[in-house]
Length: 213
Image 1 (cartoon, rainbow, N blue to C red):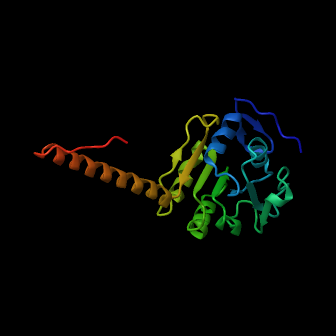
Image 2: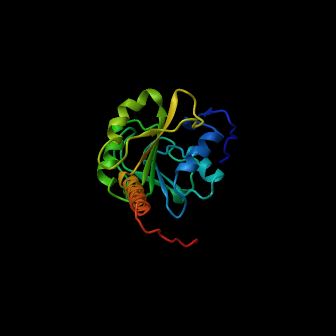
Image 3: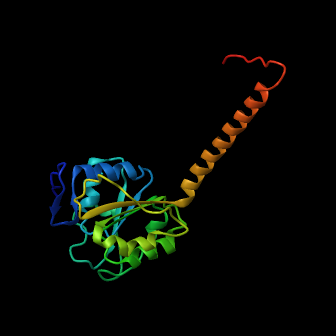
C-alpha cells in the first residue's frame, strides 16, 4: 500500500484521524524507544501512522492492536506486526502484548476507560512511557487516567508538528525518573561534602599539598 508524501505542514488523510507531518514523525521518533524494544499502538486502526513511522525510522519496532471486527482493520501494517482482540468499536478490552511493550501509543482513542484499563492491568509491566495523540478538546477527559502512582505528570510536547487543535502528550514511568532524581541528589550531596571539606581545610593551620591529575 502506497504511503502518502509528507511535508513540514500537517495534512489530513482519510486513513488516519491524526494530522500527519514530518515534524510529528521526528518528535515521535525522538521520544519512542528503539528496537529491540517495541512500541504497542493501541487502537491502531488502518495502521497508517504506525507504518509511515516505521518507514521513516527503521529503528522503531511498532506493533498495532485493534478490535477484530472493526471495519477495514489494518490496511498498512505487515500482518506480523498486527494484533487483534475481540470486542466492538469503542470497547475497552486490552491486549496482553502491552505487558512486554516499552511504550504505548494512543492515537485518537475513543474511550478514556481504555487508558485506565491498560494502566490498571499492565502499568506495573515493562512500559516506560505512554504517548497520547488527539484533539486538544478531548484531553481533559483522558488526563485523569494518566495521573497516578505509576507515572509522572503528563507533559505536552510543544512544536510537535500537529495543528493547534491537536496535541501530543508524553507520560513517563515514575520509577525511571525517580532513579535519575536520586542519582542527582546523591551527586549534590557529594558536591556539598567536598565543599565542606575544602572549607575545613582552608581554615587549617597546616597547608595541604595537592597533586595535579
